[in-house]
Image (cartoon, rainbow, N blue to C red; front, side, top):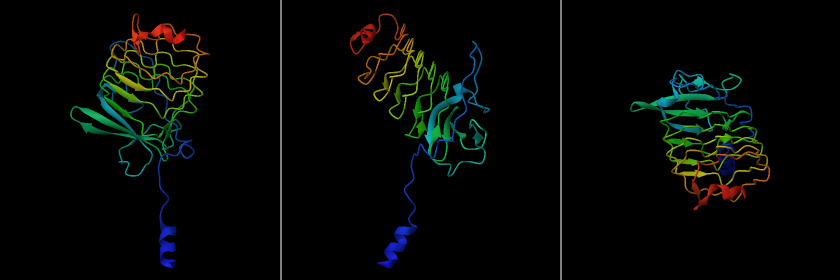
Length: 231
């Protein structure tokens, strides 16, 4: 009926993660030099990394609080972050319209979040333009599970130390990783003593040149010495 047609026309299209829409919502780099005994900020915010217990990515800027920080690469308000108290820690939220695009260098992006227990990417963190994931989750010693099934790693050349010293990590989903361009995997899972199983069935290791210390000395992966992965 005409009334039903008008209602259909007025219905808003379903919203969700949209990589094309998020292409200009580039997150600032998290890279910085680490020195023993220092505390490290959460991007350019007043918070420190050891104060964060969870990180959640969102694909809309609706309902962003007025005290949110601009953490976009271009400082144009396209990526905003805010924190909500959670006991003595904080839950960190990062949002962009359609999602958030990772910078070309994700070096140390989430490193040293030592009290971080959960990262929810919610299919709205886009990594197709990322070249380096070196040290990306370095020393996230409280993380037990990590779902990276939404990561596009087809452009990545370095995964060096990507998860090293994630000492409580028990499960990480890397089953969708495209490693066809990766050269560096050295120390990728070094000192991850609780990580016993990985689905590497889609890994293309033909271009990997550096894999020393991929896991710690004597570590078993899927019940076998980890070195056998590269044989």
